[in-house]
Length: 206
Image 1 (cartoon, rainbow, N blue to C red):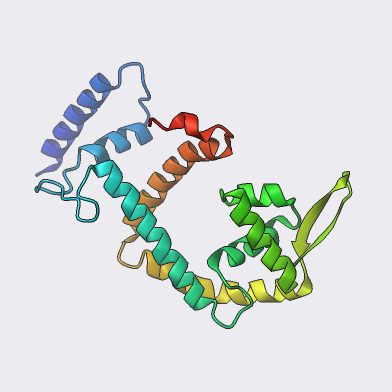
Image 2 (image 1 turned 45 degrees about the horizontal axis):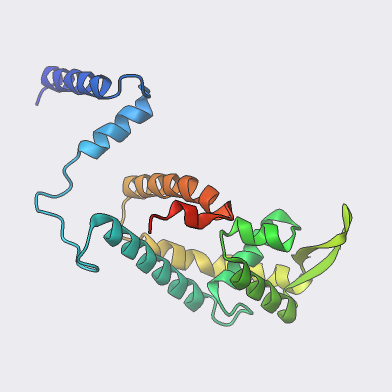
């Protein structure tokens, strides 16, 4: 295909895009998303090898599996450090970035359920990785921060965890990683407000 034919095809695609998106977004990002959605990634009928059900159920199953792979890899790389689980490391890393934060806010940053999050915090306190101290803005409240032991442990963790992170997306090229990150962020933007809503069951159609 020469430059003329390519330009002609592109103009036709832009026309179809504008027709389908009357009154909607018409910027470059919207066009690229629309173009990507038209891409036929497989000529075969989709198969649902894990669940045998719908594409939505299959997607949920794959996301769950990826989470378990990630947790396993991170736990392996943390061997020898004072972190028993990937979440202990992650909570510590968040505190390292924020400096100090309340228990509830820390749990919400990780989109974790409250009871499990409190368990992670309790274990980190018992190990001496983090500590509590009075909130200067609220005498009734307390904040969390890293201890010297925690600061040393997280530095060592930062040296090891990238091995697990690289393995998780090892078979994707850079463009695929960008596309996946974009889609995951889009999903997170949708789900995080639901997570923060105390009436989460209202979102589920039972």
